[in-house]
Length: 309
Figure 1 (tube, rainbow, N blue to C red):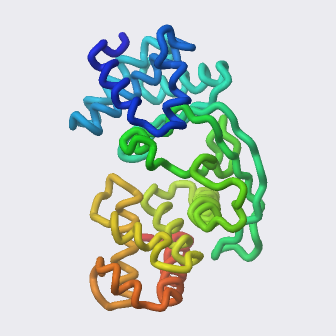
Figure 2 (tube, rainbow, N blue to C red; figure 1 turned 180 degrees about the vertical axis):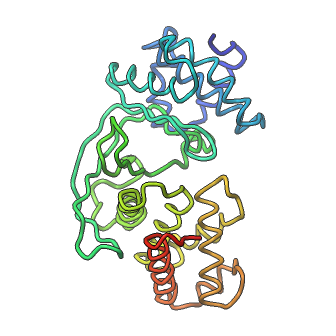
């Protein structure tokens, strides 16, 4: 069962407002006839789901039921049990068509990420908890057809910059980089790539290897502290932490920011949570860096002794 014609028109209207790169990438699947009807049906199923949760306020569980009803006919009957099984089958079918497919959640909603080309490079990455720089595989992903719900919601203005994979077949261990988010000609001097991608995601790899059961909020907590340690001003990660921090356990990015803002504020100002950005800018950023280093050291020690709160 595919999406209805009115839904299809709503999807087309939304996609017409996307960034130029995305409009060009999806054009073959919006044409009539589409370059590949199966891919078009998969894309429309996810885009409809995005509209339900992001625009129409449909509860996530209800929207996922609709998504499952649209995707199930596109995979073998033996893979229709639930969305996880469906997405496993989708990954194989996309691979056979020359694409990579990553499903699952970018909390609080499901993906997916679908792209055409991947190139591997190895970087030496220094982390606070490691004595020597670690050789780290980075997989640069190109030619995205879809880049998750945040990219859809913001018409291409925002998306994940990458992610880490550790012992999750069929993916190789390493960092996965959304290449279009970075200036690939100036990676060595690009602090967003060097800190927000390399160090942040490499910290995820290190934590997943040492603490395989660690939850998403704890993973983000450590990785954001690493960013604070290597940034040079409030305009790095701290500005974003101040902006998004709130008590929202369902969202690891938001919840880890809430925890960090509280602990940094207590450590530096002796106050509960300081949201006045100007007060942070009045500090020597070294104070933030050293406070973050202390929090990361304590957190890692708690994890290793089994006493993390």
